[in-house]
Amino acid sequence: EVQLLESGGGLVQPGGSLRLPCAASGFTFSSHAMSWVRQAPGKGLEWVSTISITGDNTYYADSVKGRFTISRDNSKNTFYLQMSSLGADDTAVYYCAKHTDGGNSPYDYWGQGTLVTVSS
Amino acid sequence: EIVLTQSPGTLSLSPGERATLSCRASQSVSSSYLAWYQQKPGQAPRLLIYGASNRATGIPDRFSGSGSGTDFTLTISRLEPEDFAVYSCQHYGSSLTFGGGTTVEI
Image (tube, rainbow over all chains, first blue to last red; front, top):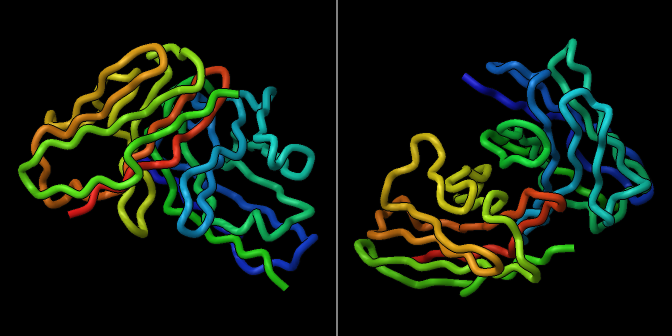
């Protein structure tokens, strides 16, 4: 059974940093691109970042470019979202998602999400 | 950057009725890279349709997708009680983007 488990969410002050891991199981992790998608309270889905199968290629939404870093450790079946310079607009549920294949493919599995709240 | 606009914002229907949801792209996109997701309150999204018209594994055949170019449609032929949810389209080609979503409510 495919499982994606996010962790690391919580309350952080404006300007602060947070690291979100997503632990994957039930599939060959090293054969799939992975992404982070967020959803602000009461809002729609927003793509945040994608990492290629090998980790050599990373992609970011303009809203997070330069502040967020995506990475993966295929030996641990885990990928990460390092977030810095956080602002109120970053408050959202952050979902990790598995691509069916490479980066140009849809998400066939999602984690349950982890809530990040940026507030003083 | 491709912008996806979904309409209507909210669709009020009854069980057994047909639902037609629209997703319009700001520029022509390959239908190979258009997906639809369903999301219920407090849950993660679920993939329904990929490649504009292909049902994902386990998705009932009352869900169908169609379209090309800039206009895409998700149709639910006969609404079941569990179908009342938010539906979002996604382009997953050279740029990754979601539409704003359509709420299908009773």
